[in-house]
Image 1 (spheres, one colour):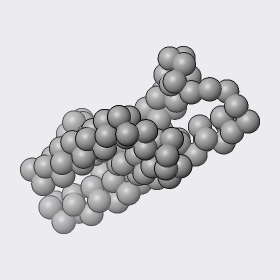
Image 2 (image 1 turned 180 degrees about the vertical axis):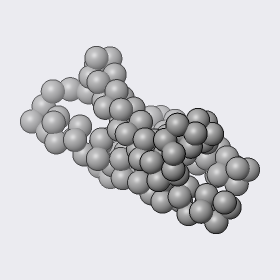
Image 3 (image 1 turned 120 degrees about the vertical axis):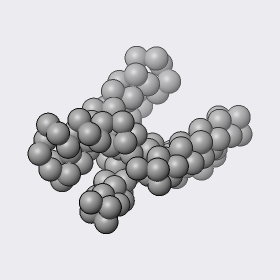
Length: 129
């Protein structure tokens, strides 16, 4: 389990560094695609954290690795939707013509990142069974 943990920590630190840089340099507003990359990376990291944190529990209660990963994917979906609700309630986003499209894209990209993480974890666990 050491390799996925190291990978997750490295990616988490990179996401944090890029996010803080983006805020101070206005990258989210200068580069339309930067937000998309951050949501993909965020979904990826959240999936890895869920799998690492709950590996034994998910395997014991769901019966299979595939089912555990699917459970974690739904966990990422919940986090992504929760994050969008938080942004709205905190006043970080504004209701404009593109709000619903942007929100749906953010959630979709987070789930896409989670699918990439799920593929990595599934391959890792299958090799190390």
